[in-house]
Every structure is written in C-alpha cells, then in structure tokens.
View 1 (spheres, rainbow, N blue to C red):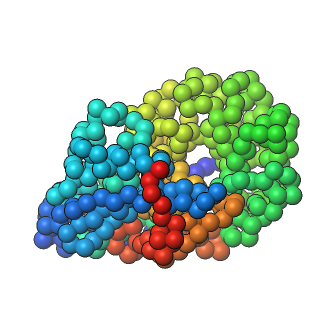
View 2 (cartoon, rainbow, N blue to C red):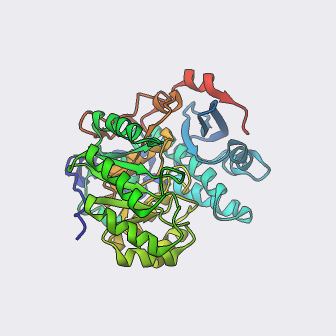
Length: 419
C-alpha cells in the first residue's frame, strides 16, 4: 500500500475570511467570481526578455511585463532566450497582442495569447513563452489589487473552495543535482540538504557510467541515499527517461520498493504512454511524469488517462503558466492523482509554485533546487531570498503579487544578449 498523501493543516486565511477580504474590492468589480474580469485602468506598455548567464553553469530566461502605472511583473521560461524573445517581439507576437490591454484580466489574456499564436503550434516553446508572460500578469494583478497571487488564484480551484483554506506555509522537496559521481560525493551533497532542513529529496539518477549500470547498482545507490535521509524523510527518484525496457523497469522497482520511494519520475521517454501504464500496473511505487516536453492540460489529460500515473508534474516554467497548472491540478484532483510542480533551478518559477502549492490540496510538495555547482542566479536572484526554514517549510508570501522582486544587481551582472 502507498503511504497516504501528507496533510498540511496550517492556513492563514479561511474561505469565509478570503471572501470577506475580497468583498472590499468593489471599485474593481467586487466579489470573488468577477474580480479578475473587472477593469483596473492600467495598461500594458511592453514586454522585456532578460537573458541571464553564469558562464559554464546556467542560462536562464526571464520576462518582465511593464505597465503605464509603473508596476512590473516577472515570469520565467525554461527555453532558449532567443526563441522566447522572438515569440514575444516578432510581428503578431505576444507583446503586440497584449500592448494596451488591462493586465488584471489574466485568464482572458492567456486565451488571447493562446489563440493568437495557434498557427505557431499549440505545444512546446510557444506555451513556455505564454506561461512566462502569464505569470508576470498574475504578479502585476496582485500588486494592483494589493493581494498575494495565492488569494487571486484560490478561486480557480473549484473542487477545494468549500473545504480548503489557503496554506500559510508549504513544503518543497530538494532536487539534489548533480548528485555526485562517487559514493562520497553523494553522501556529501545529500548531507547538505539534510542539514538545511529539507524533509523530502530527489535523487537524480542520471544516465552515465555510475548510474543505470544494472538494476542491482541502481538499488545500491538508492540504499545509500536512504541511509543518509533516514526513515522519516521522503525520497523521490528521477530516472531521466533512461529506461526503454519495461521488464528492466519492473525489476528495478521491485528491488527499490523496500526503500519507501515516494515517487519514481520519468522512467521512460514521455511519448511511451503504454510503458508507463504497464509499469504503473505492476509496482507499488507512485509513477510520475510530465515535465519533459508536456505543456498544456490537453497533453496531461492524455498522460493521466493512458499512462496510469499517480503523480503529474506540470512545470511552472514550461506548462503555460499558473492558470494552466491550476487546470491540470484540478483534473488530477478529480482523478485522485497528485500534482507536484517542476522547476528545479528556476527561482521565479519556484516563487510561482509557492503560490500554487498554497491553494492546491493535492500538491504535497513542489520542486526546489540544491544545485551543484551553486550560482548567484539561483541563490541570490530574488529579493527577499526564497529559501526554506530549518524545518523545511517556506512561508507563503503575504506581500502583493508573487511577493518577490528581481535582484537588479544580479540581473545587471549576469545579463547577456538573448541566444
């Protein structure tokens, strides 16, 4: 039997309290259901692509949406900056579609972007660009309405409104990457994550000479990680799409089941849904997938219906933004499937995940990076710093919008031309 879903009971605002608080927004239309449809009088003036690079380590793509009120919003896309910049700035691109629009009308503008770029393809990098811009719009809307994004999106999760409160704090799991090429490195890197208070960690068993040598070797590595974590922390495994043989996958899962694996991520290439289904039917480990190449709810519905998954992993930097992830989470909720977002080293994406996790009841964790080598683009990009406390919790910001600003000194130091 699988362990029950962890419960997080702390909440800073109840349904009744939120409704009362938002009722005061009469000047903007008032009431929960109409809040995001009302006019704010603010207009979008432009969209800026920020390409950041820490040479030899990381490259990141951020967007900043600007308004005539001097209020900016930020988002992030896990795609090449040159491609994202083209999607935004090209003729009939996202900037042209949104210039002059009211940023508070987030969900209508998402649909306008989705429809307006339909001939470019309704999947892939275009959706990543739309998602980055949409996240920035939520950030702006929260600042205009003087509410955190979690309060604004809470109304969208239909299944939870009558019973669930917004969580005061949420718990990330740490992706330890790279985990190390020797047993000593693995012990050191995971030991650091334990010292920082994380209560759940993921082992990225990436392909190479050290990992995926054999089922027994895979089990040996996972046993080492479980020893470091102890019995009370959750352990996730990422196979990085490295398996092609369902029989091998089943054999390996049987060997690692005694180590109490919370989920097994990406055992097969993402298009091999029949393999996912066959594995899910044969093992007592949650099988997870979604962050590799899947974008909208339509692909995720196919993944859930055919793949037999227990966990879906929409990405806060690939999957169309906060609104689309909320829709994916809603579908998963109705099927009894966990939704745990991906954003392994993209800190604006992590900030978005904090707000989503605060309102989605079937999201016990979200991804957070413990990256080797470290970089200021991860540790110092946001102000204030986004990091868990000694018990592994992150407080959900009560500040308007996403609740974080870019560290402009870091942006200036690492900014490059889109490439």
